[in-house]
Length: 219
Image (cartoon, rainbow, N blue to C red; front, side, top):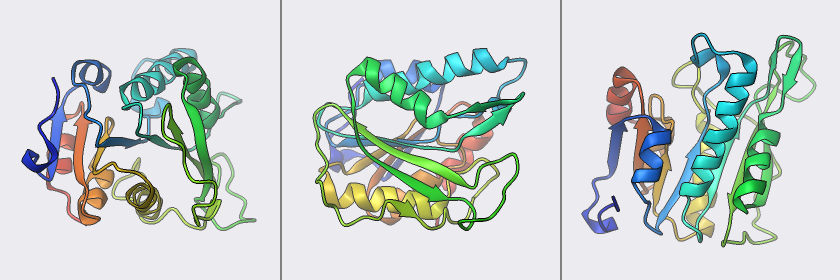
């Protein structure tokens, strides 16, 4: 199902659905770009690490395949240590991109804690990666390689507001996308910031409670 023309869209749509079922059945128009953070193992019940890694791999591929050829998909992902294993989510996304034929356009580091601060089990940084099949980012876009802070979190698993603002401001300045899609939108941080920056927003969320919050969140 193709979406309506940009002028006919509401500022925000939130669909209560499984993203891996919704994405292949709802082709996105050329003015859409994606920004999302794929769920961690902590959000799955009775799932082993290997099962979650396989799910993550498939989910990243689904997001990339759903992205229009001339647009971009951006991922905000923090690494995690599980059962003595260090899981590099940035690597998992790049592995999926190799299968879909997407090129890495840029890779920024977002500081979750000030540089030099010991953070224990959870890393003090997150990856912010941008991919595309047909779009090519300008070599000098004026944006820093390191985002000094992630910003506030609307809920415990949210993408930081400063990281969202960085990604969406870059999107607004350097691409033709005017609608942002977050297939794992949670409470709606990406959607609310997109609206605040004058962009339309589409979210997908399995949890009815979270989907309701994502429809209402204002920043």
